Each structure stands twice: as structure tokens, then as C-alpha cells.
Amino acid sequence: METKPRNPVWSRDELILALDLYVRTRGNPTGEDFEAVDEVSAILNKMHRIMGNATGETLRNRNGVYLKVMNFRSSDPHYLDQGKVGMERGNKLEGVIWREYAGDPVKLATDAQAIRATILAADDAALSQHPLEPPYEGEEGGVILAMHKHYERDRKLVREKLKAAKAEGPLVCEVCAFDFEAAYGKLGAGYIEVHHVKPVHTLKPGSKVKLSDLALLCANCHRMVHRTRTLNELSLLINMRNTLVGKPAWSG
Ligand SMILES: [Zn+2]
Ligand SMILES: [Zn+2]
Image (cartoon, rainbow, N blue to C red; front, top):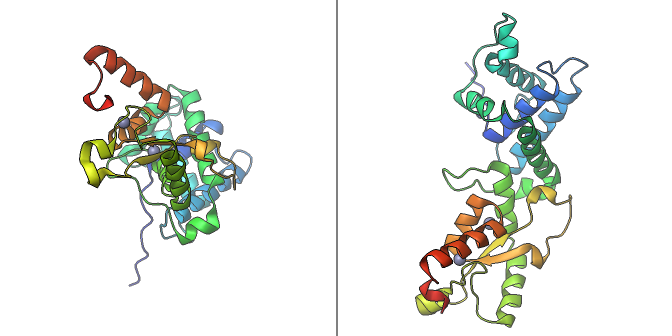
């Protein structure tokens, strides 16, 4: 008997887009026709292509997206209050996403738009050849973070950024002034991490990344900036820490 390969489980990004569709269509995504469902289906298929996942006829097709959106009925009190029974329960993550966003429609719309814009702006042809790398294990961020790292790994851009920075002086972290060479000697010479500052969902398709869109950070600050998401927030944290515990030893 022939067994079809199973489609991957729905990721957080995908469920956010599905819940957004559920809310936008008031839990009835086929009210007019399948246009909105097909739009989400196309976006999700592009996402799987640029992430390097196998795609096929059944992957996030009209039927699959429709059923997943309808699954949210089993979490929806409005729907359940009418005495109706939701469709078969989906996976655990659906309930998590529902609880996270049910009381915050603005955040849902904002996050869904950021995911959608990131996927739409991604260069389909180029990324199908060299797909995005998945984020570190346990790191959240999905397609937005993968796209962000893709820009940070642009060798040509990184080389240009380092060249420009070296012409100005020693390579130090822009947030905490950590100097890899000062700390590790020869081993650390020329080492620094490149962080892409502009939110990827604000980039237009085909737009060029400028050197000013990149910041040079030590590995610690880079990890932390991904937790706080903006560079200014991190500078704030560093300033606060400096006033509390004094200047770090390496900042001279
Ligand atoms: Zn740093
Ligand atoms: Zn980064």
C-alpha cells in the first residue's frame, strides 16, 4: 500500500495566520468565497518553499487551511455558547495561540501582518535555491528570525560592514564596547557579530540592505538584543546596569 508523506505540523507562524483569518472572517472563512483562504494557502506554501521544506499538492491547500481555521471554533467561547460543537480538537499549540491572542486582536493583527509581509517580501526564486536556515533550537521567531539571520549571513554585506568599521578603529560591540581582541588576543582579532537592525517585515521586496542597517555586537549582546528585539532597549539595559554595578572591566 502506498503511504503518502505526512504534511509537517502547523508552526506557530502558521497558526497565527490561521487565527488571524478566523478573526477577520468572524469564524466563517467561506462566507463569500475561498479568496481569503486561498491567499493564506499561497503565503504558507511560499513560506515552506523558502524554508526549504518539501511541498506538495496537499500541503496547506485550500482544504487544509480551511479545516485548520475551523479548528479554532473548539476554542471559541462565542461559538461554543451557541451550543454548537467545534470541530475535532487540533494540536496543543492551537490552544496556546488562542489563549495568547484571543484578548488582544490588535497584537494578533500586527503579528500576523509582520509574518505575512516578511514572507511576501522574501525572494522566492533565490531562497528556493538556498533556503533559510531554521533558528537555534528552542529559539522563537520562526520565519521572521530566519529571514533576519539570512541578512546577517550575507557575506558580501558583512565584509563591507567590517571593512568600514575597521577603518574607523578597533572592532568593538556597539552596545557594551566589548573588544574580542582585547579579551582573547589573537584568537579574537577581527571577530564581531553583525546584527540586522531594521525589522525584516518593513523591507520592500527587492530592496537593498544598507550598511547603516547593520550593527556590530558581541555575542552576548546579540543574543540579548534578539530577546529585547530593539537595540535601543538593550542600550537602556546596559546603561542601567552600568549605573547599578559600575562600568564593565573591558570598557576601560
Ligand atoms: Zn556587547
Ligand atoms: Zn541579529
